[in-house]
Structures are given as structure tokens and as C-alpha cells.
Image (cartoon, rainbow, N blue to C red):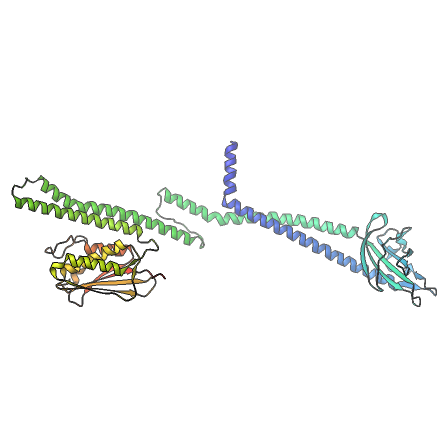
Length: 478
């Protein structure tokens, strides 16, 4: 039980919801704490300034009521001061006059307010310019913290006599107000943090809800209840859903294509196998002519079977590698090698093969074996039907992605418009007198389609058939 609980806690700690919530709450906590410190500091500074400004007014009032007699001795009429706290003992508001000697020493409490009663304020010797105000914090009567403002004045006509005027006020009320504000602020910010954390939890829960819908959709696909992700998803997740559905569709196409190819291959091999079986079951031939005919039949059917197998293997290979990036095959070497082979294969017919390629090298965005398969079939068909001339041309089509166009034409009888669609069907031979399997153009069309290209048949300028092959081109690297 404990182990299961630990695993549950571990899963929760690793969950995206927990991480988002933890990061959000941590960020909110830091923000709230910093805001509390800033607000508390601003309030304390504001109260301190207000308190100091009020005390400056009291100092100005005491300074205004200070008078000197003929001997330069100070006097202040306590009744002339407006605030009654000056007269109440230990009221928290005090004034005092100290005598300052030229050497900086003096007598403290020459005059003082009744609120000081029988005590005086003890301040350190401070070098004050005439009229300047200094601010201090000291311990006052009964140990209360005081904010002290002091300035020096001189008696008229007595240059050596300097007097320090002191006004002090109790800081306890101000400190209590600041502490109370800090407590209220802390409670308010704590409540705000709780509310913001709840809002963050709700936001994370609502924000991750589409992922739960996505998970349910994936489970439906996994358990074969549906073939694609279905449902309404947010605009931010829809591209991901579309891409995943595209992958599912692509996978379904691959599976369906594999099934179709397996069925086609089995169907294509039935005929040559049946012919070979019938030949094997027939009575053994006795003369040489019958043996030669049987051998020719076996060779022919084996070639047909091999051709079908090669075709399906080529389709499978291209289907697996057609969309791999970085593939490139130079056109000129492939064409040169095929022309040499065709010149040897069809040497007895006297066919002239001419090649016209652009000066800039062309590159096919695919494997060399597939390019050889396609161009080899086109050249072989052209040489079979040509009377004397076969011409191969190539060029580049500008665009994105770039494409290259290879055309192979001959001066043979050509194919009528009604028969061109049949010419690319698998196993169809328009003329049984010419050897072949009827798979050449069909192979080229299928391979080109797997690479995203196409095959077109049209009349040739030479009078025969022109086959146009459009394939993806690869850019020349530096």
C-alpha cells in the first residue's frame, strides 16, 4: 500500500499539470512577497515623511516663539505654543533648548517643555550649520523611541552664543500603525495568493483539458474504435491533430499499398506458374524441336515472373525511400551508361540515339537505381519501336520545388490518342509482335508517381511517340 502510494506520488510529481501548477504558484508567491515588501516599504517611508514633515512644523513653531533678553538668554512662553501636548508630562511631544559653546560642548536642557517633566534629551554633539536641520532617532523618556529634529540659532548681537533647538516626537504610534498596516497587508496578500493559486489551478486544469481529449482520441485509435483523431480541439492544438491524422492516413495508405502489391504480385505470378505447371504435366517431348520449344517457354515464363517480381520490389523500395531528404543523382552519367547499353542491345537495328542535355548539370532528387529503371525502360521501348532515330532531351522547370523534365521520342509508328491511356496499364501490350511484358511504361509511371512526378505520352516531332517524364530535381551543391 505504501509502495503504491509512493508510485502515485511520483507519477503526480512528474505530471505536466503538477509542474505547471508548481511553477505558477512559485512565481505567484515570489511576486506576492516582493509586492508585499515593496508596498510595506513604501507605506513606511510615506508615514515617516509625513511624521517628519509634521515635526518640522513643530520645530518652526518653537523657533518662532524663541526670544532672547538683553543678555542673550533664551526664553519661550509655553502658553504661546498651540499644541497642548507640550504641557502634558510624557505626552510624546517634546522640545528642548541646549546651550552650545564655541568648542562644540554645551549645557543640555537649558529650557525644556513641561512634557519632559524632570528629564532632558541627551544628544551627541553634532556640527550644525546655522539654520540646518538634522534628524536623529534616540531613546526618550521611559525608553520610548523618539524622532528628533534639531537646528542651531544665534542670539542677536551675541556672536559667540549659539543655541540648539530640539523637537522630538514618540515613534511608537507610527511604528504601531506601520506594523498594523504590514499585518493587514500580509493577510490580504496571503488571501490574494490563495485566490491566485486557485485561479492558476483552474487555468491549468482548463488548459490541459484538450490534452485529455487528445489522449482519449489516441486510445480510440489504438483500440481500433476509429481510424483518426476526432473532436473539437483548440486552434493551437489543431495543427498537431492535423499532422497526426496525416501520419495515420499515410500509414493506412502504406498498409493498403502493401496489401495491394502483395495481391497484385500473387495474381501476376499465377499465370506463369500455371503455364509452367501445364508444361510440366504434359508428356515429355521426344524430339529436339519440342525440347527447344519447352525450354523457350520456360525461359519466357521465368522472365515474366522475374519482371513482375522486379517491378514490385522496385515499387516497395521507392515507397520506402522516395521521401528521404538529401538524395541526389546526377543525370548525365546515368544517361551516358544507358545509351551505351542500348547501343549494344539494339546494335542490329541500326538505331541512332542522340542526347541533348543542358550545360549546367542536372540532379535527380532520388536514388540512381530508380532513375536507371525509369530511363532504361523509356529508352528500351523507344529503341524497340524506332525506325532509325531516338532522341533524349532534358531541362529544368523553375519553381518550388524544382523539377526536371526528361523526354524520350522516336520516329516509329507512334500511338494513337485513344491507345495512350492503355499503354501505361500494367501488362497491356499494344503489339504482340514486339517482345516484352507490357510492364515498362507502367513501371515508369508508378515509380514517377511515388517520387511525386508524372508520365505523359504525346506525339513526337520525329513522327513517333514522345514520352515526357517529370521528376523532382535536386539543387547543385557548392
